[in-house]
Image (cartoon, rainbow, N blue to C red; front, side, top):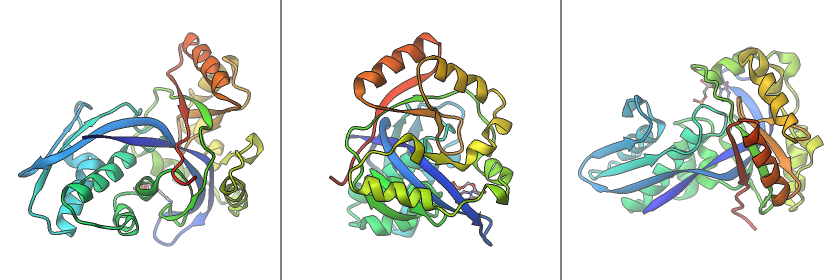
Length: 283
Ligand code: C5P
């Protein structure tokens, strides 16, 4: 059976400070969106991994690593055949690889009848990457710590967004962008707390609530980003926000019709754009 591995945007992303373990303390409101990779997990003797992304050895793929980690920790003797059809742009700030990994953990938990709870899966997911725990629960969440301390929020059903994904990639992007941050850019997490509180009451986020610390450095890391932002604005977006460490940009849309019109206009501008909706898990 095929499963959707949804992607995400960060409605807020604040860094509170550096930690002794080399990570940063964050406060981020993450919103799952309905742009998804398709993943199938089925019975097999060994772990067999197939992805339609060329040239990436399986052992470097987070979803494959998720499978071998769970098999080793849960001491499972069965295997699984995992197929990934990618639709989410990779290394784009949308969490595609992290979501695939979480989807594989959930799929194998079912296939191997492990009966692990979400909180146990979340704990394991944290060993794979800071964004992976969020995708075990999905929906809308305030993530703190290095990203693995989750408060699930009720969220706002069917909020529409348009994404623009500039075709720019950097090796080890996330760690590089974190290294570019300076202490003067750190904040206290209050904006994320405030948005979490209003969204938890089912009230949609407003433009002025959205903030992303990587806005300070993203245009140094991705020099062409400013040009994409201008083209997105020219297509009709009123305010454009960065997702994660970029380079994906998104616009919050008042309704679906507005989002569809903006999406068409982005396509006419020649931008790689998607119209998406927020995924709600708690209603
Ligand atoms: O956790 P993940 O492997 O996705 O993180 C990639 C890199 O991003 C880390 O090695 C670290 O340099 C940086 N990072 C950080 N603080 C976080 C999350 C990631 O410094 N909260």
